[in-house]
Image 1 (tube, rainbow, N blue to C red):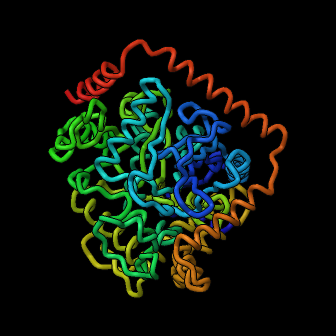
Image 2: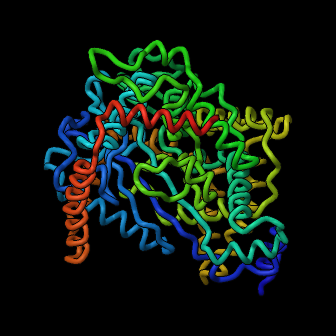
Length: 528
């Protein structure tokens, strides 16, 4: 055992980090808008060759019919995960019309109005209609444009073999599943405290097309005739123009105990909210939203990280968590990197794994309303001003320099990387941390700075530059061919998704009005 490894184990109060613990389970969900070759949002239906978005395991849609979501299966190999994501892109491009391609930035393409944003459609089943209605409600509540912002979700869990071992190490009196849930909440609390680091390292949305801000207040500056930006921003996607909600500012969602989290969201799902009551439930006989409560569904809460559990279609996420505990976590704070064909790469994944291991194994004080507010303020500062010289954050009520705190964190995260390097017989995790460390000293290395520099050097507005990157990505994937086995796998999944959707539609035995009434009644009953 080398001395650096001994130091790293001691940092986390471990006598060893077993080889099998390094078999992290991960999956990626990557959103991308379908656009025309002139940079406008595609108005065409979800391509039939991609199967049905309701039932396809790997290719679906998010808010809009034009917002594709590519989903990898859970794997323990980073290379296999990225290879699968790469193959999903190749297959998708092979099905897309020649006059369409995928937008490669998180902030959206050219749009004239909300009317240009078609809602995702999921067929004629009750559950399919509910999914579309949920999106209808989001549009009325927040505007459709906000919902076209794309991101990458990173799903992470420790291998099952880790939990009995760690349970013994911690000498916990809790039952194993309860202990696992508690430790994932522990991870989530630490993630929140330190989440500002991720948009600094990986944020790639410092600018946006002027058309995106039409009718919306903002504090952006003019970059050129067509583009707005903030000079030191890292990820406007996570700021007031993106996934922020005035209504949700009233929520204090606490992660000290699972019941705290579940009860907070359950209450929001059963509490009427006057502005949403003003929207109403129906207009001209058509539903406008699922209900008039603060949250229509659990997923309407815009968290940067979510506790998750796998369930069957139609099962409520909070019910699954309450009955069986946390199985994995979903990181939701990542931008698409327009310089990378897949939107992220192995180096970023290795850093994320190191960061999340650090969050899991480090002490994690319980959150309070004061710490919750401090976390939100720190994230806001880095999102809007992350590359500003002399940026200050707040830590336990005291001012601290961004660079000082970031460098302190990197020491601890590098200890987690050392342990992962050891079990994988590599130095790639430490190298991934070193690459991020350089960005602290030199902000020009960050994706957000690189994007602005490339726009200046090329003399291109945000949308024109992104289209040039999208064209290069289009050529990259269209030049590749899938193996016969992978092509057959994807084609069969598409065909099977059509049959599965038809089966769901045929199984409905009540009208949608009754289905929706029962759906809302069940949500209400969970709070009483």
